[in-house]
Length: 157
Image: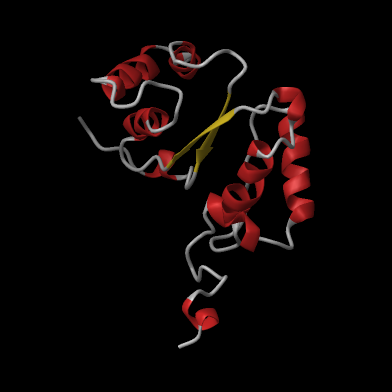
């Protein structure tokens, strides 16, 4: 079997990952539009039909552009938290934040502290960023994949 056949540049049905940006092409205009909207607003929604490439656009287009310096006026340091809400959106957000380099790795009870902070007030995400180990110039991009899950189901308890 040839090398080309063993390593297809196309991921199939799964989305591209952030480290596959070199394989992701043809959507530069969409990435530019996302960057322009992000410059104007701190919240953007990427909406489209299932399988249209929303996750790939964000993961292999937007994220590498940000970490590559596309928004220098916001600073070049970005931490990316990727999450899916699932049935426990607050806990999953806390876990996603804990997996970034915002906090001391393997900090005991970090997820529990973050969860408590997020539940405490509507500014919980701001508070969680404030008690991180990074300075104020580090940007946080929170990517909520399958955001509609927030409205579909929440586990009781």
